[in-house]
Image 1 (cartoon, rainbow, N blue to C red):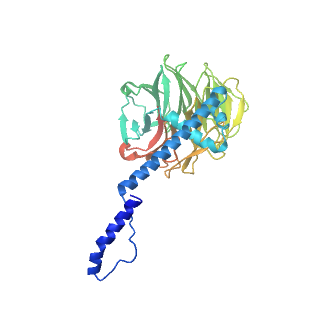
Image 2 (cartoon, one colour):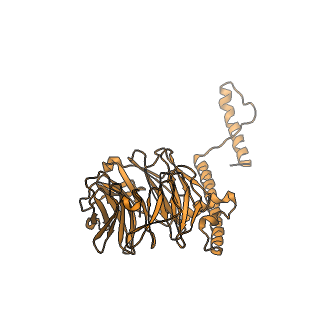
Image 3 (cartoon, rainbow, N blue to C red):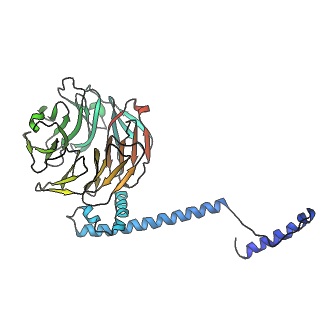
Length: 403
């Protein structure tokens, strides 16, 4: 109500008030003021304002996406991160969020975790933890990773005494690959798979690098002596090349399983290897990142965290990888691009985190006490799920992966 309608209400109230006021020995002083309120009306106003804001944001995101795609079509051989830097500085974060959201909104990843002797599939949005039964006796589970095997998504699960190859649609028929670990308390913690050659690679703190040729049923063990006395740790088997990090050095392992040292990469130990079709990213604990070109082996220093990096994962993005990195002290994970300077943070008080996995639609991390699992959208700062897993798994989380 407004205008004349309010005046009419005020006049009616003034007339109606005369008799009770007179009976009470009072009289009306001045003109009455009418204020009308409605919870429903206010709610509608708030919803309309929110809808308008969402529409404006969607229009801005759409415009940023169109401009970025135009730039990308004109420069097909330039990394997406470098193209992002071609936008005005004030638009880069918004453009990155829009690009991440557009890619992640079209995907629905499956989340798996290992704890104790068990493998679990987790529905973070539905707050469900479902056990996945494995056949085999390889001891407690240490690690899990998604691979492609015979054209389909499978899991590699590292255990104390070997590795499982698991088809999630038929986990009861998982294949087991054991190794002689001589009573070691450790397990196979870093896993990779060369789909073209049909070879599983796994590292063990006491044994070294173990290579299983699936079809031949053979096993090759490469100890520390094969890597200049350093324990092999991280592995990348994307594409035709297999790389293994041992200490501060990087080695290439050929079909003959003979490690060959790559020159020019010595220094501090390697914290993480992340591979793309274009390049291999080598992340050091200091947060520095080096890129090795797949085509010619050229080594270049690219953008890094500039701070301590002890855990991390690759976030698939436009055919490349962004990096999700964390340290042993803070409560945030940092998302960075090796070819741009746009950084975003994922926050939660449950850090510092112990393990991280990333996919276009979700980032998952294990809490500092390994009793909780946190999940974010890559374009949002706060988690959309916080699962207390210890109460349902009865063991502390060891590792997570996304399929």
